Image 1 (tube, rainbow, N blue to C red):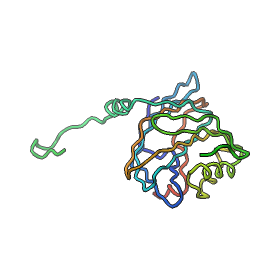
Image 2: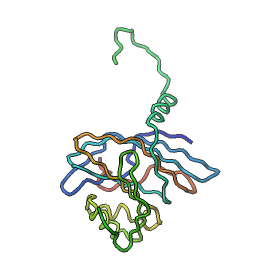
Image 3: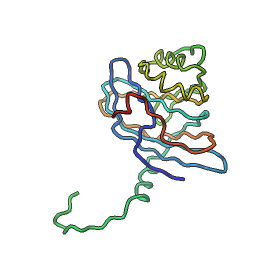
Image 4: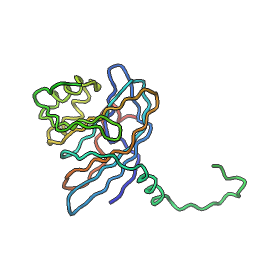
Length: 196
C-alpha cells in the first residue's frame, strides 16, 4: 500500500519561549501485510525562531530508523498526479540528558538523516514529559495529554532534534520501520495544533 498526503504526523516541540510551525509535511506509508510491518517515510519543512527544536513520532513498537531517498516523493507525485486537460489557449497558461528518570528508558540514540534521534519507552506520561523537558524539548503540559494514550498502549516515542540556525528548515526523508498488526495514519495531533 502506498499513500502520500500532507499531514501532521508528529508533535513539534521547540524550546521554552519559542515557536515552530510546520510549513509542509509529506509521508509515505508502505504496508507489508504478510510481515505485519509498516514503513513510515516522512519529510517536512518548518518555520521557527528557535536555535534547535524537536518533534515526537509515536509508533506501536521500537522503530528501525534510516535515511530515505527524497526521490521516492517525486516518483510518488508523478504516479499519483491527476490527469489534466488544457482548456485554456496557450497564451493564457501560467505557470542532553546523562540519564533518564524512572519510567523512561532510552532504547536507542543515533543520528539519522542529519537529525539526532532518541527512541524512548515510557511507563508514565509525566516521567516522559520530564525527560523531554530535561533534554531541551518543549515543556508545555499538553504533551502529557498527547503522549498518555501512546504510553498506556506501550508505544514507543521517537524524539527527533533539529539544529535549526535559520528561520526556515527542511528535513531529509526519514524512514521508520516497525511491526504493527495494521497500518495506521494519521497520528493524533496535540490539542494546540488541532485548531490550526
